[in-house]
Structure formats: structure tokens, C-alpha cells
Length: 377
Image (cartoon, rainbow, N blue to C red):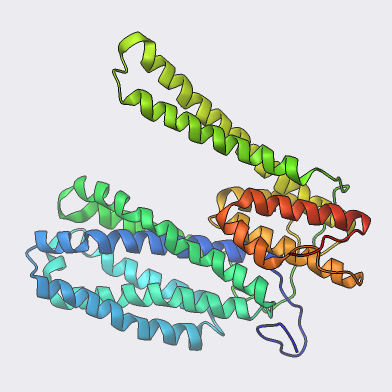
């Protein structure tokens, strides 16, 4: 019984590392992020802009009616057009939405026009709908396994979480000028950059063969307990120092050099956090290269790419740890031995407390280097 999402005849199977090693994946990721960010910001402040232009509550609802109707068009573009013409299916709604949004800059009164609000909402909803649906179709075309597909889609979904910061930026832009012009310009900037990112990406579908890559590093054992301690101790210190800063701020910070001492504590927190982040990046770099040094695998990212994703991509570290655990179990199974790590426990600790998950991966990697087996819990 196969474990694949899709298994048509012929063609190579894409792994998570294959997805993350392509420009097209990150173009889709960033374009989706920009659209989600700009769209979330606009919809947050939109009722205020419309009311300022003299629109009634009922008229404002027309925009959301058009936005919901746009999902039907977005679904059509994703399932019918994107399968053959992926890039135009994504870019066309962005361009159309941008052109309509430009009209309100010289004529803010359009925010009170029911016809304009419906058309703008329709195009806006189309653009927001086509991206998640088309991206899922593109990823399925890679014929990846369930874990690889799920992790690749999970990383894409973090664009929705990141867009939660948009209302803060949108409120600043709204206060910067009357009529919502700065906010509209910010929304247009997001759409334009998204289009520019997608233009070089050809094709967007993952139905071709992935690029071969291999960046080996000589394997090196290290204590899982020590790895966990190095990552946990800075977290404890940051917590304690933060409590100290909070306690000092409760008193007279100008008396007895308390203000200077608080600044020193804040600087210590920053230095410790940076040091912990550097060690995390170094570990991710080493572990991917060392596992590649044992045996080449398309499931492994290059060390530098793994380091960047673990540090800068939301949920990037848990996803990378899950794929490493799955790879180690596969290697254990190929040698006729038990699983090297429990995927259930690894998933639990990856999202709850990553230092423990990192220690589990390091322990399994140590045993895979010399052929020993870690009994899975």
C-alpha cells in the first residue's frame, strides 16, 4: 500500500527538501505572504475608510459579499486554469486587483460606491482564494509522500499566521493620512512585489524532476544531553533576567543607578538570545551536512538552506526536525533494525519544546553513525 499523495506513472517524487530548494516554492511562499499581509491589513481598516468616505454599514457589506463571491472565481482559476497555466492564474487576479485599487487614490469617494466595492471585493476575494488552492495543486504534482507534502503545505500556511501582524501596520498607515491613501499604497506595494516575485518562476508546478544536490560533512557524535542543555540554559537565563527587568521597572528606575543596571540586564538578554540562536543555526547546519556525509539523500536540505529555514521561517524548525526523524527511521529500517526515533514523541516535542526534539534527533543520529539502534518510545 503506497504512502504517496499521488502516484502517476513515471516522474520523480519530490521531497520536502526538494520543494524548499527551489525558487518557485519561495516565490509562492513570499507572494502568498504579501497577499495575506496586505489583504489582512486592508480588511481590518476597510470599514473605517468606507465610513470616512460617507458609506453606510449596508454598503460596506457589499465589499464582503463580493469578496465571498470571488472565492468561486478563485476556485475555477485554481482547478481549471492553474493546472495548465499556473503563473498567469496567480498573476492575473493580482494585477486586476491592483488596477482597481489604484482608482481610489485620485478618487477616494469610490469607497462609498456600491458598484466599485462589489467589483473590488470580487477581485480581492479571487486573489485570496486562488493562492492556497493553486499552491496545493502545485505541491500535489510533485507526487511527494504524506509527510513531505504535509510539511510543505504547513510551511505555506504560516503565511496566514504571519499576516496577523498586518493590523498593527495598517493602523499606522491609516493614521498617517486621510482617506486611507497610505494604506492603499501599502496594499498596492504588496501586490506589485508579489507579481515581481512570481514573474521569474517558470514553471510553478512541481511536475518535473527535482535538482540533485549533496553537501556532505564528516559525521561527528555529540552528547544529546549537552545539546539540549546548551539550548535550554539560555532560555532559563532569559526568563530570569526578564523577571529582574520587570521587577526593577516597578520601582524608581532613576534612583541608585537602577536605570543603568536595567539597561545592562536588557543587553545581557539580547546577547544570550543571539548566542542561543547562533548555536541553533550551527546545529542545524551541522546535522544536515553530517547526515548527508553518511549517505546522500534527496530528503536532506543543503546545510546553509536548512540553517536559514530553521531560524527565519515560522514553524521551519519543527518541520525540519520531523523530516530528519523520518529520514533516520527510514535508514534504520533499511538496515533491518528498529526505528531510531518515535515520530509521535518527536512531533510532540518539536512544537511544544524544540530543545528536547533536537536532543532526540541528535541521539538518533549518533546511533545511526555506528549502526546502533535507539529503541523508540
